[in-house]
Length: 292
Image (tube, rainbow, N blue to C red; front, side, top):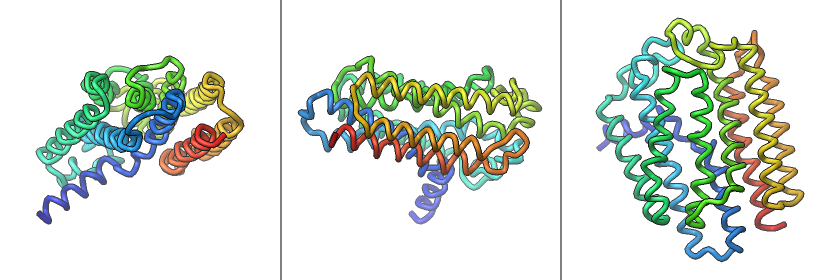
């Protein structure tokens, strides 16, 4: 049993479990917007939020573990990632596969607990979040696929609350897609030389690091535009606009941390700042939805 929990702890460390916070605030915002559209009359709301969180964690855990399994050979050849758990032998592929399958089952079970449409769409959602792992083998725009994998979360949360989809929430899907793609481009700049030598595809490899950082800024500008259109679509108030302003300031700070000739602060830009983006966004938008 001690060995099992040790392996489980290593698996959670491998998939960076704590980074579930990236997309979760946007999923919860989607759920709150759906509750507002339902005139705050949704039955069993507390349990729906519990199942939404469990579904989010299950889907992300399955996708991340699958990614680590699929990329284990590539990671072993990359000086930056060769110490990861599977390439280094700290964690067996068998245990990682078991964790992936159980996480996927947990996601489907949580989807079933929400409503029939969520259950029907759960295989498609799993296919989308796992597809990303293949894309860097054939397209430079794998970052957008990863973005969309996270971007479907708020739309899925809307469906979880209302049992149907409203086009307005797709502005939040677009925003999360562009936000994620933007910060993933920054992170991928670290592997520019490795991707080039291995024949892998990425925006930094195709456009160079300086060009990639410009594209990342463009994506993040697009994210802010989508948030503005989302706020207007749902006729939200001043708190939502304050949230957008703070997110904009955080993104400006993030891009100030990285330069084409200095990537030493990529981890701060990727992990720390983006964790704050999601939490700050949820705080302001929840206040607007619930109190203003």
